[in-house]
Structures are given as C-alpha cells and as structure tokens.
Image: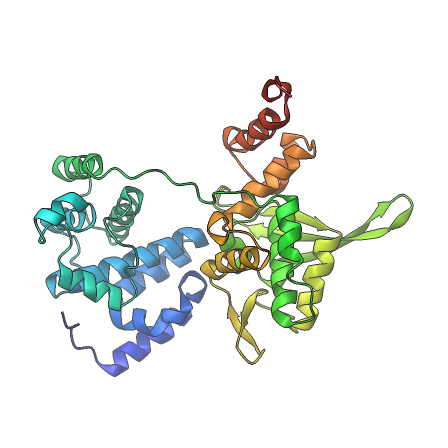
Length: 383
C-alpha cells in the first residue's frame, strides 16, 4: 500500500534529527527511516538516548520500531496507532506466527502476499516462512516499551494476546539453532588470519578486526563495529623475560549488554593484537571516531563505521577464503572460541571471564566443561 504523503521539508528535518542519534541507528537507511518514522517516533528515540539507555538496546528498539511502522503501513494503510488496539497486536501475531502446512491448504493463512511483498521490497523482511517466536516476542516487547515511554497504557499483558502467542508457538515449532555452529578457536583463527597477509587495506582492517575481537575476550559484533578511537588507552609495555616488552592497550567498553548503567567495562590487549590494531589505525589514517570503517571499491576509507552485520560477513568471508565452510562460522564464534581456547590452554575460568566480561558462570563454564569432557579420561576409555 502507498505511504501517506509527507512533505519534503518534514523528511529532511527528520533526517537531520536522526543524525543526532546516528550511533544507535542503521545509518545507511537514514533517509528511509526519516520517511517511515513519525515526528513523535523520533522524539521518543531522542528521549531514550538522553535517558542513557544502552546502545544495543536502543539499536534494537529503533530496528523494531521501523519494522512495526512498515508493517502497519502495509497491513492497515496507516502509521502505527498509539496506544495500539488489542486487535492490531493479535493481527501482528497472526501475520508472523503461522503454520506452513496450513498455508498449503489455505493461501490466506499467515501474512497476506501483498503485505509480505511490500516488506520485502523495503528490505524489512528477508526470511521465508513464519518468524522465530523469539523475534515476535522481542518486537512485541519493544512495542510495549515504546508505548510506556509515551506515557500510555498498552494491551501487551492481556490474556488473549498471551494465549494467542502461546498457541501459535506450539503450532509452529522451530528447532533452536546455535548462534555459531562452530567456535573460532586458535587453530581456526590462524587459518582466517592467513588470508589477511597482504598490505591491502581490507586485509589490514580484517586482520585487526579478527585479532581484536578474539583477544579482547570475544567481543560482540556490535561492540567491534561501534568501537571508537577515544575508547583506546595506551598502557605500559608488558615485561617478558628473555624477549622484548609487549605492547599493551586498554579498551574502555563503557556500558555493555551485561553491565550496569554506571559501569565502565575495561579489557586489555597485549602483543600481536595491539600491533594489528595500530597497523590499521595508521593505514586507515584514523585519528578519531569510529575505528573499523567501510572501504569502497576504490580503496577509500569511509567516515562511516561498519554495521554489526558486516563484522559477521567478514568472519564468514575469511572462513571461506581459508577453505572452511562459511555457514559453520559467525561473529559469535569468536566469542565462544575465546572461552573454548582459554579452556584448552588451562586458563582459569575466573581469569577468562574477566576478559570476556561474561556475567553468567553457568554460561561461561559450559565451554570449559565441553573442553574438559572432550579431552578428559571419560572420553578415552577405548583407545
């Protein structure tokens, strides 16, 4: 369906306003978002930025709000109403959690074809089939949060909506998939780094990304993409007996996904990862702002930071170049790989968690338990 008519002046004004909160937005879609979101949407986002909400949370809220607005325009021909009526929330569930077998019988089951086409053309819908239940729950939670921030009462706790979600999830079971099928352990990382051996800017950048993401404790792709020059602090070299001192660097992560509002998480790099990062900073002539940036086809370094998804693509691309199966690896593999490698090398769990900044001992220890089981006596009763 056609979008409501919006004056060029209003769109330009919104685009300028979006620039002020660009750190939490998919900036390459700024112009599209300026046309899609309303003045009140942007004011709500600015308010959340001023409240100091975590960057990852803000990015997720913005992404979900844009999707909800696009879906509402396609499904109803109007922007999302605030507060949303219960019927609209139930329609959202029906459009996103459906049974493929039932659609074979009834073509009108699930999301109508014209709505699906509209969302695909706008690049909001990529997956085939029903959505993952967790994605639907997250978007409804974002919808609820944004409703509350507008000072309104929502319908998201209604028994009928909860029942509809529960029944829809039962009817459309989806196997749980791991974020990365395989961990990027030391041997795998070495193969990927071997593909970054030239003085080409992309090789220098990707080598730094892989080494920094792994050595800093397996940083999340959003943390790597959002890393800025101002977060780095040079530390005194580390003395090593019988060898030259090793360069040392502190990365101030600030508030992270698992830290408190007032926390300033700090992790450290030592040795080769520091050298790789410094080589990229020099080659890219990066003195301030975003560290890891886009490089165009002519070898020019952009002022724009990489998107988190680009970090994921770099991991997959380097895995393929190394002769590995790219579908088995992702950026999260660097995080799980760090803890797995630490376990394999006998690094105590508390020490590894200080670097990875895991808060859950249960989650972090699972990598250690797997490593111990694989190499332990219980797995070697028959040799």
